[in-house]
Image 1 (tube, one colour):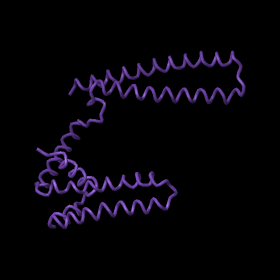
Image 2 (cartoon, rainbow, N blue to C red):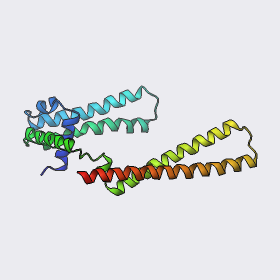
Image 3 (cartoon, one colour):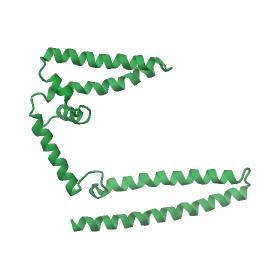
Length: 191
């Protein structure tokens, strides 16, 4: 069973240190040398970040918080200590095989058909809200661009037409999602 620090270290190793140069450099060193390296790396990252941010006009608090972001990221190297004792090549090979299996069967979590029903509903609602806000802003901008000083009657007509537009948009959106869900369920049933 892989622990959380080991998962973080393996993720860091596969994403940031993909050629394993830093890992292979640190592994044969004694623990005290590695601790000195970690301390110098984190401290150096913080100081370089602070110096780089001092060249830009920022308040002291903001520059301090911004300097902590790369420092926190680089501090994940500390988790290498959790994987030095593991047989890393076997773990990485098993992960590659699992990724190939997932890719071959199209089992990725980001695919709509592999998401749970409620996650898809939340995603659809989120997209609907964004599209509705876009339509609303575009309509208001178009209305005020075409009419500099609208009367009360023109404003009421705009509101009425906008409500009709939103109703048709909602009906179309629900119909498209219904068709999408139908074909997704049909395709899932084939598998």
